[in-house]
Image (cartoon, rainbow, N blue to C red; front, top):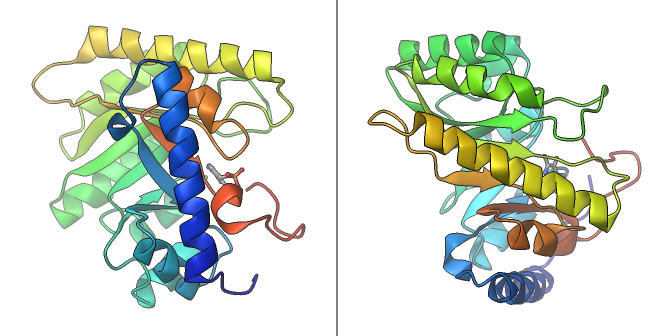
Length: 243
Ligand SMILES: *Cc1c(COP(=O)(O)O)cnc(C)c1O
């Protein structure tokens, strides 16, 4: 685990990221207040998370169940919301459902059914996003583009789930031009899904795309939620890459 990042360093990074977000929003004729900054806190200590929240972070994104559980036990997220943004196995949903404000990484009916079942047991409604494998990468989680609508319809039939939108992670190797295309495609999918499904039991208002390397581009492409780790906390140790 890397050492705890100071409040001062995080606060400076938060200010810089928010300024970059604002400039990107302006270029796109958007208001930055429509866009949520989610701090991707994987591998960070509980004290780093506390410092980030003190520095104005309102949502933390966690992508490993084990780290989520440890930080919850530590009460590290006090004052902020938590989103689960990583790959979720069906046998671990009980550690996540009802413990987080949103699960951004639902990518199969099997996982959705497991989340629905646990949410029903807890008698809650769990906010979810569908993760789209926008680069059609074999090694990656996320639903195929042509499965998204059926998944969304399945979600609407689950009384303990509230479908809020889509999340995507473009291929790590994509060029800026390719990324622009992936964001455009995901945005279109988001708009189509809204058009087809928006009704009284859904609130489709979240499009989660953009990470440290590409969040300005994602904002220009219509993102409403960026998940930023490195630009807030510095590079992660090499033994704990991407996922
Ligand atoms: C780690 C992670 C991020 C943030 O990545 P950075 O490049 O460090 O900003 C965003 N989304 C997910 C799902 C992640 O796992």
